[in-house]
Length: 328
Image (cartoon, rainbow, N blue to C red; front, side, top):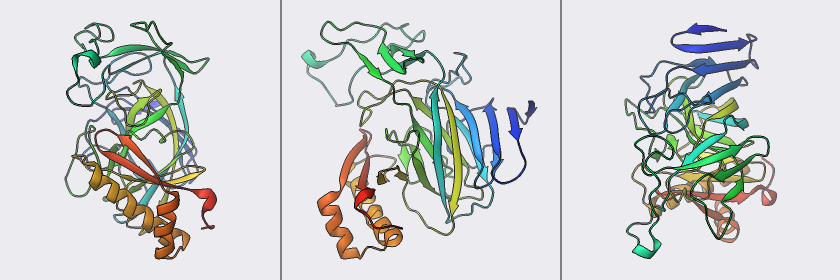
């Protein structure tokens, strides 16, 4: 174990297929090409790392950033990645690594009538000075999450954990450096709950190395991230990387064992536009990768497509089950 360029680094091996262990000491709030590279890897390599929570607290409960808002681990430089390629990031493992988390408290649905408004949490329920966060307990042994306060008289607010990454993306084209709050063609704060263990995230490449970032760990989140957060916490993350050369991807994708999903994301949301993005990309995926005639791909989407609200900020997902698709 040794320090290099402001990070804590452990390496194993020295050829393609090696495993890297890295814990950052500096985290970022933008997807920017200007940030120093955290780690260089090759396609086929595996990375074992950690994320901090959306307020910057790590697995020890130590705050590593001074700014609230999805600090990012990265960037990771993938050797051989060039503009126009697609970067495929397989989430090999996601593990909870601490016994606490927090969430928002009220749905993002505009003005609410008084009888539906939620009481604000205590100002110090999670962190001093924050009056919009509710505290959660995470049972690492049982893989359960439970709201610590307040207590409902009608139901137990305890659920099975399903850890996922809210943020994953690359540095976008040019010098554009979006913050880690919105989402767009580069990925970003997608908040799609199926970006979890076993999923592969496809991302377009705009700069040499791809410059991959990830963060915003959730112990649990429902579709849409309705209260503006999941159960926010730090995570242990293990991922591997692959490339599709010259693929010209236009929007993020998520592939699981059973589904292919195109994710439509725009920085300023707007559901109609993101639905169109996701639908167009899913059509392209069916035609170019599966060899389905365009007319048949349209009919297949009409009869079998599944649409999801990934985030109430305007991110949507369009998917097709693999069981009905021809072999690639």
